[in-house]
Image (tube, rainbow, N blue to C red; front, side, top):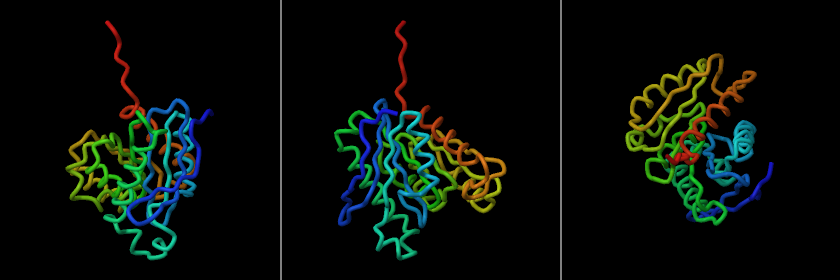
Length: 219
């Protein structure tokens, strides 16, 4: 696959510098920013798998650490949705200013608590056109959900009973274009054979629908 950008990056956000990996295929017209869940990082094997699949579909990806190593050692920071949201907004604004991202559209892929920060950030940023949540906790951003305009896909495992219940409650608060996908036989981490592959395909299809430019046919 031909890439026009593939580097480790340092993202300045307020008073910290966050490590990230930015990969953009030559034909990409959209970049997906990942918002990781509690205790996870840009090196998450599950998110790396989804990112690799997105590259094959000509999407760029930015995976970065929302917390520094020192911050992550404090367990409470992993559930500080306000802090995670500020970091995600800062990274999104940084990416938008990069020449390599010129003319690209932007989406979020969030997991666990990262889904809450993704939806909360999307409620502030009009440039975010699509959000996908994997086993997320959108309920932790409940007050922001009615203000989300980005097309939102919530993916939950059918065996992830508590999260499914909370996600249904959050889903009812969304007034944007939305869809709830329940994957049969999957638990919270989608560890069962073929389930993460299903997540990646659903995410790519959603981003394809809402981020790739519409071709207008001439009459």
